[in-house]
Image (cartoon, rainbow, N blue to C red):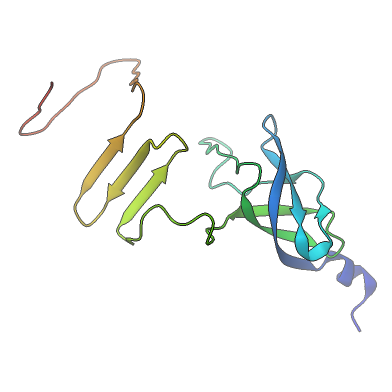
Amino acid sequence: MLPETFAESAVTLKFGFVTALDEALGRVRCRVPDLDDLETWWLPVLRPKTHRDRHWSLPDVGEHVALLLDARGEVGVVLGAIFSQRDTPPVQNVDRHHVRFDDATWIEYDRAAHRLTVSCRGDIEILSDTHITLRAPRIDLN
């Protein structure tokens, strides 16, 4: 039998659904069906970078997420969102890095075709503190 202190600190993989957002601190609360619909306390969301460069995005309320939780379900971290039969991947191509937004705006890089595509449903604003350079053998403006 494991010592109680080790058992209390054991980490378990769980799946849940986001129930609340704390935008100021980038945390979420989740409902975990496997734990009798336990609602977690505020959990941080794992990010690629948070110090000098910062990546910001929160899962939506209702989003299906993977969690690492302590044995009591009190402390943990959200690893990220999970595709499912309800929420399917927007593309099925390993060469494409694709980000799709709720309003149907999307950004995609196809590494096989060496092509970056932006499809925006609204205005696009590009800001620079100095200047902007466009270089290509052909530039079409219309």
